[in-house]
Image (cartoon, helix red, strand yellow):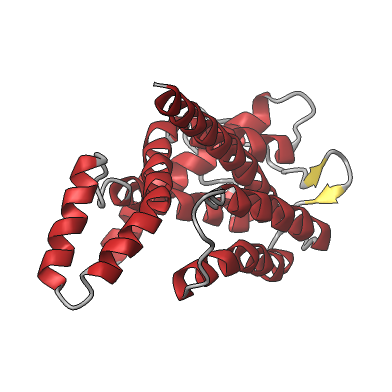
Length: 245
């Protein structure tokens, strides 16, 4: 267990923390909040191919849910036939049920390291854990834009993060069809509930953590909103093209 902890620190935590301090050193004004935003954006750009693939897969699955439910209802007494029909549907639509899992698994340790950096990396004893080429700033100014203490808790950071989380969750909901009847099944109700549950959970958790974590959360949510918006526009363009041909 000690070996795994040391490996995690060397491979994930320490590089991310050093990049944060490096950004802090070179940014004019030495604003830690700006450093956190840039580090988060850098991470999201590096992971963009994986996260884009996962998001596209998730959107395809969401769009296929009405047809999946039809197959499940039609063959609910014949599970073998149901599995074959679902497999045929996924092959026809070129959707791999496991395509979005690997990118998420790869991101988990990195996300945990980012979370850990922003949670405890502001402590004075952590600043000494630097590579030889990264200058030790001795003291980190925890104020973002001169007024927000990133070491302290912030209700307003939690509120802003919850708003962006709601926008992100709303984006992932499939648009209601004008022709298909609305269904009030359990799965649809759960999906609608998650739109409000995720922001509520964000609002409950983030005000209990350092504002640095909330700033990271807001930045990654904004990036996700941009990414999902891009995917939605591409999907709508493909749908419009297929309808006109």
